[in-house]
Length: 231
Image (cartoon, rainbow, N blue to C red; front, side):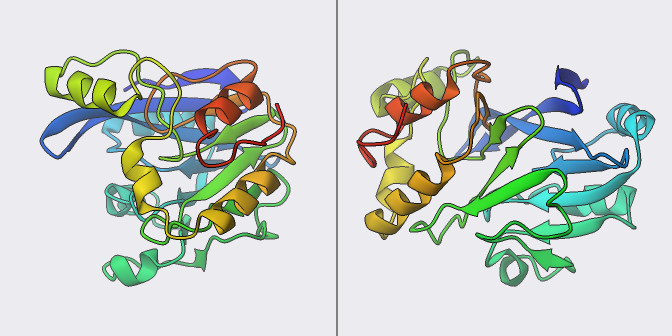
């Protein structure tokens, strides 16, 4: 669960969760702001050793839950850093009434984060309400479940499911996510706006990081939904 440095002021940490009884690796992204404070994007289950690593990098001041599917370990993170500001995806405050959210993320970049990030809501999928993040300094796009890029799994069931879904050992949007989209036109418009950002790297919650050529990789992964995205 140790931190991995991805770029200047950008790290990740990984853990394993169970989804439908199958193990699935998931990823938290850590971003250091110009003032030295830290943003935790999609917090994982943070143990004492990882918390010490984070505290050594800087004070944790922002906790981001950018999807209605990525919130399981918010309470633990909030207890470790009770003064941190808690941000949630649209609809998440109603889903997690045990937490007090300071702000709701959305399609417009919040002024409080604008020195570091840009945000866009991936519209058309209200069950997830995923907010996509762009870290300008490293030209990195950060997503949760918009796409998967899993190349290794110890679970035979996971490998079978991903192969059957066309999402094994390649960057792809799973059929489940596509099926959950209720407004494909709104989803396409969101993707067109996301592709206005000049990103080169892609970090997703599940799978291998795309270190270069991320625009083409992501456009190929989303071709069934939005065939005309710029590469």
